[in-house]
Image 1: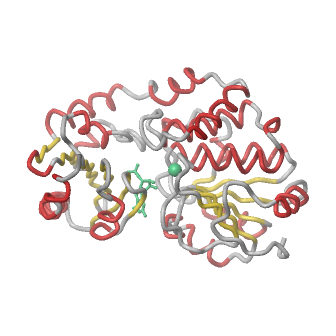
Image 2: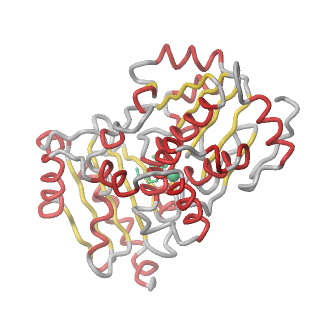
Length: 352
Ligand code: 5GP
Ligand code: MN
C-alpha cells in the first residue's frame, strides 16, 4: 500500500490503478478500522456501517469506533452493536488501532472531530483514507476523497464501493445503512439533495431491495413520549424569535433536558423547526452540557453559518449547517449569539 501515490481531493471516481491496489489488499487477513466524528449522526453511522458490511463481505477484519455514544434513534441499525464507544471501550479501541493495517475516517474534515480518539490516531503509522463531504478539509490522511458537493458521506461510500466492485456488491444491508446516511443528511431530501446523482444512488439502493418507508419509520417514528413533549415545550416556552434579524433560536438547560429524560439524539432536528416560521433565515439550538454549551446552527442561502460557527464558536460544518460550542454559561452564550447576529442583520436582511 505504501506505493500508492498521495492523491488529495480525489474525485468520486477513483483512478483505476488505486482501485486495483485496494481490491488486492482489501481482503483477508487485512485489518481495517473505521472512525467517525463526535456526536455521530445518521450519516456518520450510516456511512460507517455501509463500509463495514462491504469490507466484512470482502473478508477483512473490520472494527468501528466512535468518540462518544451513538444516538438511540440509530441503535436498530444492523451492526450498530459492534461499534466501539471510546468513552467506555478505550482499551479495545487502542488495541485495534495498534494492530490495524488501514484506517478510514468518515464524515469529518478535521482530526479534532475525532475527539479523544485523535491522540491515539495521531500516533498510528498506517495508511489512512478520508471519505468526506465537509468544506475545507484538513490534510491529515494519506488519501482524501473529499467531495463538498455530495449530499452525504454515505453517497461517497456508495461510489467508493461501486468503483471497487460494481453495483452488484451493494446488498440490502449495505444499502439500508447508506440510505440512512443520505436520508438523514438531506433532512429527508429537503436540502443538499438537488443533484440528480443523489437520486441515481438512491435508485441503486432501492434496487438492492431496501424498504425505504420502513427505514424512515425506524428513524423518525421511534422516539419516546418525553422527547415529543420536550419538542413541544421547546417550541412554546424556549424558542426566541428575533424578527428584525430573521433569526430564531431554542435554548435548553440541563435541568430542562433531564426533566424530559433527554437521551442522546433526542434533540436531533430541533434546530430546523424555527424555519417553519416565514422569513426566518438563521436558526440555532443551544444545549447546556456539564462543562459547556453545545450549539447547532442552520442558515438559508448565501449566509455562511459555517464561517459564523468557526469564527465565534470554535466550530464548523457545512455552509448552511454547522455546530460549535461555548464555555460561557447558557444565558451568556445566548446573549452573545444575539449580539453577534445583530451585527449580521444587514447581510441577513439582504437575503432573498
Ligand atoms: P449538528 O448541528 O447536526 O450537530 O451538526 C451540523 C454539522 O456541523 C455537521 O456536519 C457536523 O459534523 C458539524 N458540526 C457540529 N458540531 C461541530 C463542532 O463542534 N465543530 C465542527 N468543526 N463541526 C461541527
Ligand atoms: Mn455528513
